[in-house]
Length: 503
Image 1 (spheres, one colour):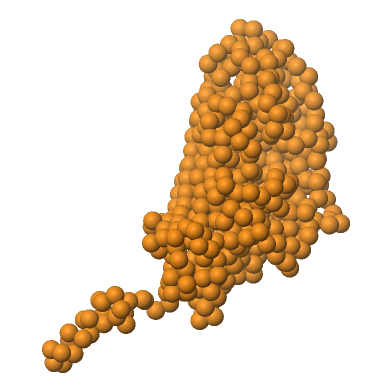
Image 2 (cartoon, rainbow, N blue to C red; image 1 turned 30 degrees about the vertical axis):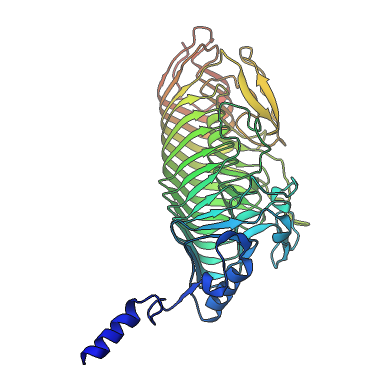
């Protein structure tokens, strides 16, 4: 090859206009007409690139070097939406740019529709969102109404329904108008290394809605999903950080792992519930940190008929939890989310929680409770080390998430209402009779190697159990209150030889 042809090939490979400028399989949104100036609506240009990529058999839609203003985008099979570092996909602040879309699948209330969403996919296969850039929902600027559920008036950032082989990697999702991520009936889902920064009312020392209306900005919702791996994520959210839900009595969450995540929330940290129609089984949560969280650090609940079993939670560090560290609840609210749906009978059993350490835990007390005739079963908690605030100062809470309330220190051994149909959360009973753990309506409950302490004054036992069959307490080290009648207080506890003797 002579020198002329060598020079020509080098020029084609490296010049800005050369033939090798764009790798095969990459659709640059600028080539579809995007402006990337943060002012011009680029919805059509981005959607055109996605459609062309999909029609060609798949590839990468590339956003780079700009701020791309857009309304609803529909992601399609075999397409990766790649937001380069420094680039921003910017949500419109106009509610009319997020249309309602007909669907084959029932929504939250059972209608065959999906409401406001920024990026939407339905029945898609092999789809991804990746890159080190930012997807900004502009929730602070959004002009939509405050309906319930929130997404009927304000858009979620991501909403995928009945999709398979989904990957969300490395991107930052911030400032959503509603739930940040909502994955419904999806399979083989990988969420790795993402950052969620969507927390209105950031000051944890104030009431939840002190500075602005809440937008129900859940960080990550997995709804009736299976084969899911969530790892290495940082989530700071205005509502529940990581939440598993079930809206259908015939579906559920199964085969899910959540690992190496750091979360902070204006509601709960890592949670199963409250929407709990179908089942939750074979779920593992490990090596996570929960801090500056308003309600519960770890909560497991079934209140709408779901079956929960084989839940494994390990190696969790918690700090500054205004509600409580561990909340386990079987109730019977029995809310349907599908039209004419059968409501199942709730079951909560076979739970293992181990190696949990925490400090600055609110003064409510942790709880493990069923309801009369429907006990929680086979619950093992081991290697638990918690330091509570104590009960000598009032608690600041939110009644029904809205109205600030002050909960004063209780009398010794108050009567705890059943609240069978109540919304479940750690503060639902008020201050419990135990500063550590209150257990009621349970069977085969094992507490092993507990270390319980408190910072301020206390007048409650460390552990109270009521209507429990086969309670086992081994290796308890707990600070006793001089004002409490016992360290461990038992009422109607049966078949329980391994319990420390009262003081």
